[in-house]
Length: 295
Image (cartoon, rainbow, N blue to C red; front, side, top):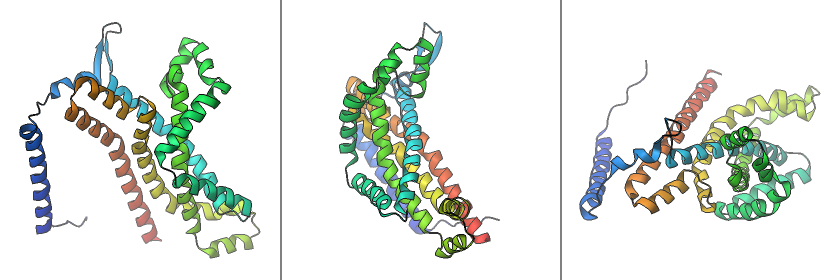
């Protein structure tokens, strides 16, 4: 039977202070700033009725949310691959591998992410993408294929910038994932490595059959937490006009002056993405703690 937690006087004091702060903030906005709330205008920026289709379709805020989801998913996948490979390089017995891994991690982690976004935008979007011709291929593709590209990535006209933003986020998050992987592998006791070598296993099989399964228990909880950070960090690409949620909110605020309504709505939309992930991380950590206690 779960243990009930009693409410302490300090909890009541903290809740009272928070309630008073929220009430004061509402007072300042409503009375001090003489701000006129117009919540009735927000739903039309989430969904709109399309008379051509005869149905309700997503509007600017939901479109921005969908772009954030696409950007976050692809960034997480690419960053996980890059971080796993770099984490393995960081613990390699070869000096060159360790130098390559450490150079990548240290250079990225000591750069402001905003600088990294601009570097990738002007280098990849302006220099590499035109050479590869991906956007031109997407523009010349059939209408159904363009629609598929737009659903999974971005419309052909904005594909170059989307890929640049994706690469910047993946490189930035990959450096942190690399350290998570490295720390997880190094958390395995040294005796496990020695036992695996005593069995005559190659280093690949040591990692795959002995070390890896044990390291996963240490890697997964912080890795899941890094996924949540990736969703939040995706808002930084608004500076290069990627039409994700933050960018759409800034554009909409400039056009309508519904400052508080828009940003409160955006806050709830971000929470809609991150809060379930945070709950999943908490459950994952609890499960691993129960497993470690049982063993």
